Image (cartoon, rainbow, N blue to C red; front, side, top):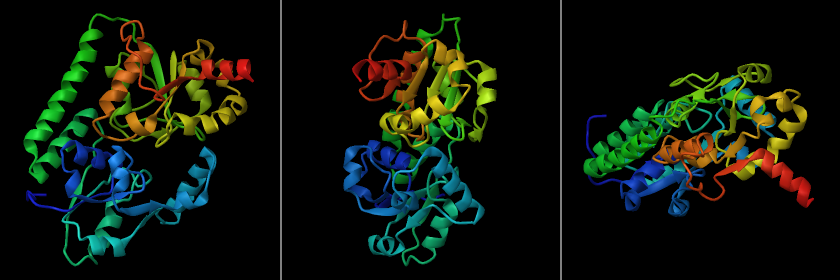
Amino acid sequence: MDCIITAMRICSLLPSSTEIVFALGLEEDLVAVTHECDYPPQARSKPVVVNSILKEKGKLSSAHIDEFVSRSRLEGKSVYLIDSERLREIKPDLIITQGLCDVCAVSENEVTEVCEILENSPEVLSLEPSTIGEIMDSILLLGEVTGTREKASQIVDGLRKRIESVEKKLSGERYQPGVFCLEWLDPPYAAGHWVPEMVKTAGGEPLISRAGEPSFKTTWDEILESSPDYLILMPCGFDVEKTLDGIEDVTSGVRQWHALRAVKKGHCYIVDANSYFSRPSPRIVDGIELLAGIIHSDIFTQQPRANSVLNVKNHFYLQTFLG
């Protein structure tokens, strides 16, 4: 994309880009979002032009969601619905989309097809970061395109300083525990893309996962064999409460669960993946700080944000004690 749009009507089809648009101070230019764009809270007031078919299915287990999405992909169907008529009425100048994952958000191909019927021929910007550095680059790119380069640079400089602060505190620490990040409960998926790098930055050794590459299906036997010191549950798009809804199916239905080193040591945590891990947005750095606090609690003593992390052992202990 070569041009710089200085006066625009922005349509963000990614929760992450919606966050960046607000961070750049462009909230007044944001004219359309998706049903998942919930941060900052003001984003909820914007017109929604993309919805998920899964919303109509009601409450589904992780296994049923995976089955539905897999079947839809095999049949060449999307799990997202674009309101093309509303888009036509809104007439965006810039549409922000992605080509990274057609499960997490509407695909670039679908957006291109819709743009063909829009009379004003909007510019389409596709963001596809796979690493922390590329997330920073996407912020700078969006700043370049929207004429907010200086603000974007300030944001990225601030994020990099926070990462450097974490690294500096860990500079003399030799202990790097093995950490496995679970991106889906059933079937189990190893978290990929930027998550292994987040673990490494936070002072852990990422297990099974592949930095900069997509997440992939694994097995509980493989997870058990990797012998993680810490097990971090971060189902894509889930917050702590939503993960808790399905955690008992894992703890009671997976025979390997209680044999895991991390579970025995009480080092199994649920984190707010939707806010701090799933989305390639500025809050990825919050996720790094959160992980550092879990893995090296003796060094990072600041209390985590409310509802951002939960120790599974403590949760079930309290349930048993109070129940």
